[in-house]
Length: 127
Image 1 (tube, one colour):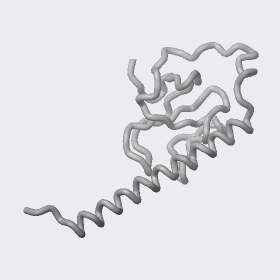
Image 2 (cartoon, helix red, strand yellow):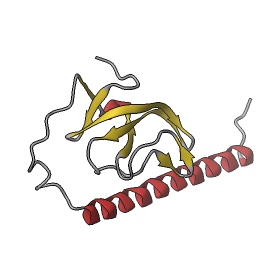
Image 3 (spheres, one colour):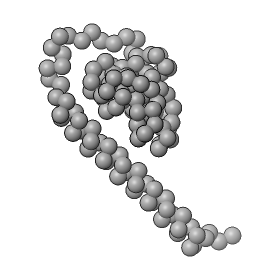
């Protein structure tokens, strides 16, 4: 079973519908935008000012395609299934930490690329 728009997929126990497949404007690679069944996501399909799809707040999540498991249909959610889930405050705080770490990693990658370009200019490879 492969990922396609409108299909169901699971990520870390959360089921969602695939709403976007492709690169993000700030990162290459195959990203998948999921619309989760519950408010356990990080966004509403809008990431860093660009809308990839629309859904309810905190129902959107972007992950690498390799981190998803395609499923035929979502699991039935029991009435008390979310009693052990983190509350919205914890989820929001974790989301903020992940966004900071992601931003720091991107900044470090850009700085590393800048340093490499500088070094290549200063020390060209001999013919």
